[in-house]
Image (cartoon, rainbow, N blue to C red):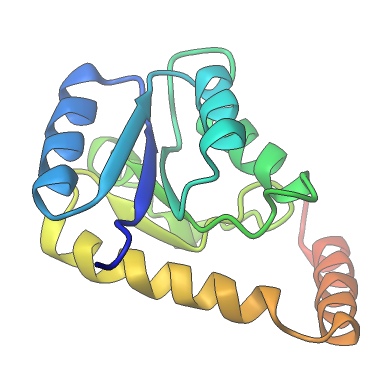
Length: 158
């Protein structure tokens, strides 16, 4: 029997957590949830999920942006696939790709709330596969990518 994929959902909205947890469980995933970034980081460190569904803007002090940054800078967790989610597009008419900040917020994919559940189901294995490919690349290729990202960050207007 094939092992179920483990997903951690980090969101401060209890209704969203319940809805997504139930949906993903019904589709064969093992799901754990956290209602803030601090608990989310502890959960991710403990469970080592196959992917993280991360709310970008939480009302708690440890926001989704900060959690993403911490995961990307943690040697053991940096390749964890992250799907960023937000209702900003709907509420503020701001799209994630309008002002990307690759120094601070680097999810593997991004979805607007309300989340298209069918799109999410197809996106999860896709981001997991891309993360595995990134992880298996030669060291020189990873170093070149990091070097390019650093140079690109200096070219962006402040």
